[in-house]
Amino acid sequence: MGQFVMPALGADMSTGTLIEWRKAPGDTVSRGDIIAEVHTDKADIEVEVFATGVVEELLVEPGAKVPVGTPLAVIREEGEAAIPVAPPPAPAEAPPAPAERPPRLLVSPSAKSLADELGVDLAFVRGSGPNGRIQRRDVEAAAAARARAPSPAPAAPPPAAPAAAEAEDRQAAMRRAIAAAMARSKREAPHFYLSETIDLSVALRFLADENARRSVQERLLPGVLLLKAVALALREVPELNATWQDGKVIGSDRIHLGVAIFLRGGGLVAPAIHDADALNLDELMLAFRDLVTRARAGQLRSSEFSDPTITVTSLGERGAESAFPIIFPPQVAIVGFGRIVERPWVSEGQILPCPVVTATLAGDHRVTDGHRAGAFLIALDRRLKEPESL
Image (tube, rainbow, N blue to C red; front, side, top):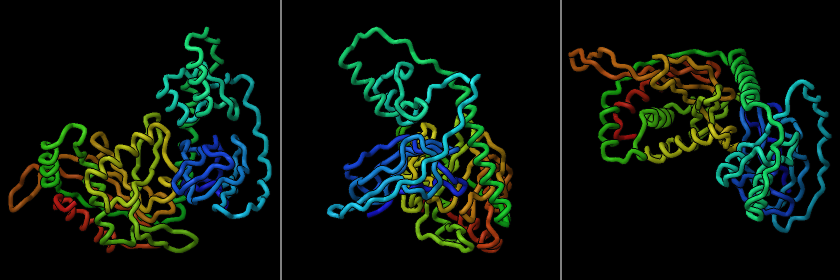
């Protein structure tokens, strides 16, 4: 008999709000299945189950805001006798919204995606979730009703506030969560920084040759070379691929790269690409595109938030020449890349124009030091100068 608990979807998360259940009592679940959708200050996240069995009991109702670690459901293995588990205390009733504030159209990201897929106008859907939030089952019911009666007289849509107001609130909450995590990191982790400017001439020629043989949809981005080079360099300096928990360092034998993704409405998230060192460039490109698409659609999974072992942030072509990022706790290092720029470069006794990028490593002095961080940057430089080995 196992308990499914409110997961910690980031070191700065202390509570989460259950939006909806995707499974019901009696349903069989396998490891990796989506069992629920949870709201945090940063995103609405699809939460996976990490056990295989049968959902015995749901302990928390949608809309409840509960601390991390609170039992949400009971899952038993096939043939195992049921054991009753006391539900958590009822959450305190949320204070009512200010009277002058107009009602809003609340919809979970997965319900919105399903509505787009089925062609359902959310303005005509009544939500059955907390505070009238529209959930997947509401969209499915609306689509079924439309199929039964294809030409009904449209009902007046429920009043809804401008979407901009909700987006503004979400962005403000995300900024507060990011600020809290970064303030904690700066207080607790003694940061140090090293940087290295890397000649990308060989890497970009390799990329141009590769892309010339590919369709537009299959082309690789320079950022994918950077991600793969970081993953392989971590094999050589594995102590940077770790977390600091309960006063000690916990190393990882798997390299899960957290990728900082800037959201169109503001803010950022840093979900993981799992086992990045084991992926070839095509697989890494597909994983990266998928992660960005789902991050901006609000469809990330809990495992992608809970287990990054190091984070990479790249400012891209519109960013500054260098970045000095703050470590995401409980990780112990973060790698930042500025934009690729052309600079005079000495090569084989000649001064030539070369594309270069500045890579910066922020390390936690409780775990590592400048010598080992420097070894990582040297390995990163070497990997990018040998792109055929990526």
